[in-house]
Image (cartoon, one colour):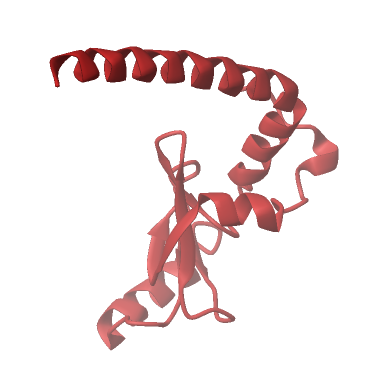
Length: 131
């Protein structure tokens, strides 16, 4: 994957992008892009919470508590779990790519939709002949 422009590296993804790719929340999530573990207190029993706190004390760059939220928002992007707020900021790279290539993506979606619509119309005509 090409390097992300430094100017956007620290800018979080937009609310629109997050909304489009967020599916749910959980107490503990491992980022599929960097392996970091983010966790919130919600629904964790005392033993699991103590274990995660211990890990965070020993590996603070890998285990990150989110004390401000009761769950960690996650989604799926490019076949990997995307954890919102992860320091790797993978969502920003994907949003930047999509936005930078939006005209080509729009053209692709238009052509692909037209092709699929034509195929569906042909199949509908075949079904109508049988009925």
